[in-house]
Amino acid sequence: MTILNGKETSNKIKEEIAEEVAEIKARGEKVPHLAAVLVGNDGASLTYVGSKVRSCNRIGFESTLKHLPEETTEEELLTLVNALNQDPEIDGYIVQLPLPKHIDEQKVLMAVDPEKDVDGFHPTNFGKMALDMESFIPATPFGIMELLKRYKVKTEGKHAVVIGRSNIVGRPMSILLSRKGAGANATVTLTHSRTKDIKAITLQADIIVSALGVPGFLKEDMVKDGAVIIDVGITRVPDTSRERGYYITGDVAYDEVSKKASYITPVPGGVGPMTIAMLLQNTLLARKRKLTSGN
Ligand code: GUN
Image (cartoon, rainbow, N blue to C red):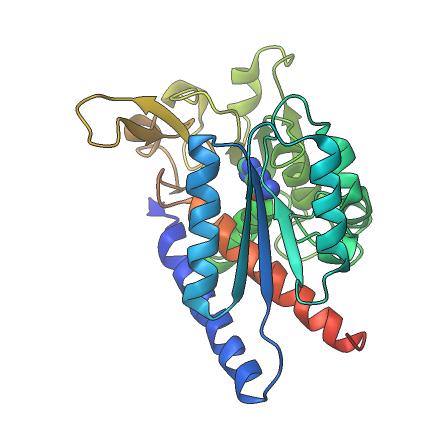
């Protein structure tokens, strides 16, 4: 069994990006600038956004955090999104999800300039991804594909089962694995909350990507010998014995499933760090595209 070490791999990717940034600086050009918009004070979102901004600083990117209060109106948020679209300093930005309930998420994501949409959530980028055209690919599925590629995990002709159909992970993951080309070419089954007898399906899987958010959901009796296991779950479980009051756990019952797996991602230290690395990669790409288009 091989552990797919996302922390180590993401550090390697960040080093590669940092080298490119150093070259950009040496040429006297503008370095990539990522902005993150956070509305409200959701604990997990604060952690993720903080981590994204810190990573920017470490690799030499410029970064801007726009932290707005919970009661921000949809109109105010749309005004900020428009300002970021117009700001020539900003190469790419993200609006951290989930947004407060009184704001229409889809409306906000639609307002993001697709050229700056480094999350790949705008319909233009999502559609291009599905059509195999160049686009920004959502960071979590992009990170999983990159992890599989760097560990040379074979996907061609394999049966990949994705659990969960979210717009951020499950659905784009199913598209990427089924695309034509090296590192993809899998036969994909997308399962979700209405799927009947999920176990009968996961037992046929060569690769399982679980993006459900239910701790310990995937058990040993649901997995065949030698399967590749990708755990996207990051649930905070309250735990008063820890200083921060919780611990992080995934969708996979790791101790039992790892005994059967050929490859497995740990939580934490698997998919999570890869998401940040690929967001940075997308931001570098956004900068390079602006450069070639003369901006
Ligand atoms: N919330 C959970 N994951 C993500 C992500 O990748 N991007 C954004 N913007 N919000 C998220």
